Image 1: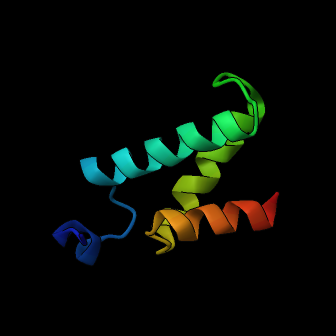
Image 2: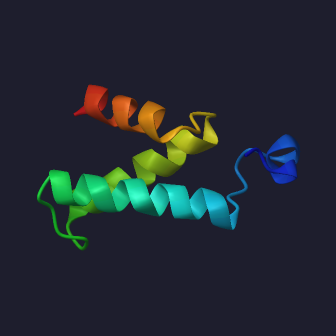
Length: 70
């Protein structure tokens, strides 16, 4: 679902965007055996938001990009 806000400014994150990103972040933290408060987790979160704001909106697309960068 594309929000009307994305048409105005793709950097705006809606509650559903945050939910998707949080879900993927949680999965990746678990898969990578990280803690939420480590520097790598902060880098992961920043990378997820950056990719999302650049237009990669699917969970699979985000996951693929994260794996390619790892």
